[in-house]
Length: 123
Image (cartoon, rainbow, N blue to C red; front, side, top):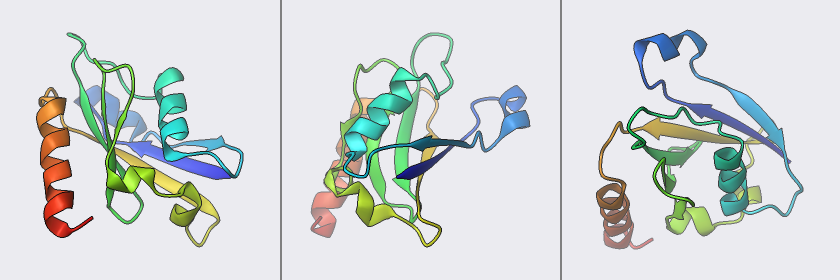
């Protein structure tokens, strides 16, 4: 399965390569958590001086799937992040994931707000 990953820029100099597109191949039964673990392990995300960066992972349709933080060892999945990755396949046969950069915003607070929003929406 092809997974097309893009991310927001973290600084003006980083804009040169935006949207930082990268494609990975995975076995068809891979989970979203496994994809995100590989993204982190391969150091796809920009590292920030000071060691604190927060990212929200979104599916192509905009649904938040997880929160990733430079200071965390693992991504924290939201309800949408527990879905079957195959359900996110687009018409072109690939899964699209985008990482929104939230600067040094507290990742715990971001995760809690997104989780509360999901609960309020009945996710």
